[in-house]
Length: 198
Image (cartoon, rainbow, N blue to C red):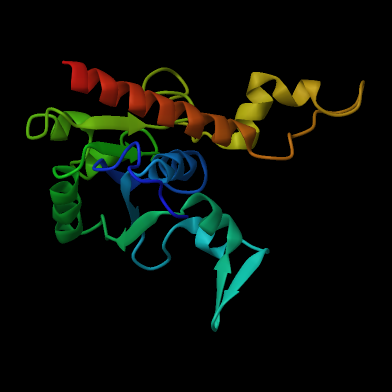
């Protein structure tokens, strides 16, 4: 995609620790508006969705996942092994040079890497930190993974989808993930505006 000149978020750098859909769709929107997005991927396999298909796109001798490409456009991907001290140190160096960090790991996972908001705030007080979770950071469900179809079921959305008097039906698209990405992108932009004002 060709960026309009000047892009609304030009000069903004985002460190993206997200995968699958909710987080990547958020950072895709921010990248579409001109932000520089640095996506951190697993060193052996990359983002899980690199293997999701069909559909596949043929590029030379390679088959690329259309799903992965659809929500990761306009980003730079790098691999870091967050199970090593070197990988964690590199991730922290990147975080300290970014305006925004976004992640969608299970609650507490970033803290094990030394990359939780509280661990970065002292060195980077202006960092905007966005965590996308299914159930928030606290409460009885905080440790549960937030899969789209589970959120659709628990929210009651499946109960109003499908034939009358029939069983619950999942909405065709992962609507909970898409909406989470939209809300996260809006929240990040609001936080950036607030940071600029203060």
